[in-house]
Image (tube, rainbow, N blue to C red):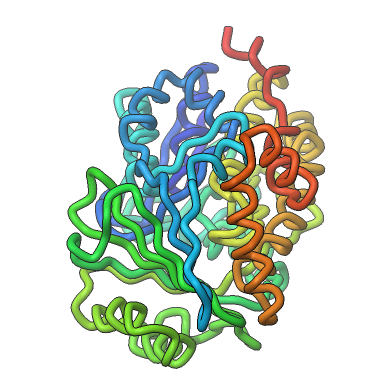
Length: 401
């Protein structure tokens, strides 16, 4: 059985690994000319994704590339800075956790598959027929038994098969920017965050990076729309949103014209009643993005890819059995991720001065408490920890044989 996966980010290579292990013939197509090596931001892997990565044999590499961020300096606008033990926060949030740059994680998953999987870079799908005939911008047409869209929030596969993004996108009322900074801006192991009403800016370095990264979150009354491809306009939006916040933030923004990498997007959730149609299904952000930077989408993508591969293996490639089983297995997790993302966005980008104070005081409290007590507080006050710890994938272990 021949399966085409569109997208070589996170979900695509994980899915390719497990499908190949189960005996399927897999081709992964990626629009970019090569894997990204610069830009992007740090992502979190929680317990279920850590387990799956261990079964893939790549967990040691992931741990080697952990950002090493262990200290947090939280600076409320107009208030006193708080220094927080970030390792304790992470430990209280999840039983098993790693933070890694997205590009590093993508490369690790790709390396685990490139010997057994056909990769086509620098191309994109232009048409998909009900019979599985696929047309590309560059390559000649080919026929596949199944096609999987693992091509992210702005999925081409979803647009071609299900309709325009506007039918499924649910804007969360905030935007995200990521900017590359000179390495001397950062301090290894430290995350600095400035937080004010409606806006949060953070900066961190990592022990193995040649640069530092600044991340900006701010509330917005509208999503980007046509501005999504207008980098100059995006820079103006960012400057306007963070004007006068702090001289340090101004320094970060001063690198907008010089930084080698810049990412900007609306924080949007994808809500679909079903993410399968005919021979086509979606995985990760393409089908159920909970919101970039706030919803644990990387862990959800890894779990989704693993579950999809397992259900296809159990069904002997029968999509009419496998696709519904895949969706049923993930349904509660997807709904929970959406709710957790909305809650996280409200916490990370407070709408009031009281919210700013609560965020800072809460971080101080968890950092000061013993580990067990801090874990109990976070479990009572956040949905993220409960969500990821509750999602189990052990039942799929027999499918490895």
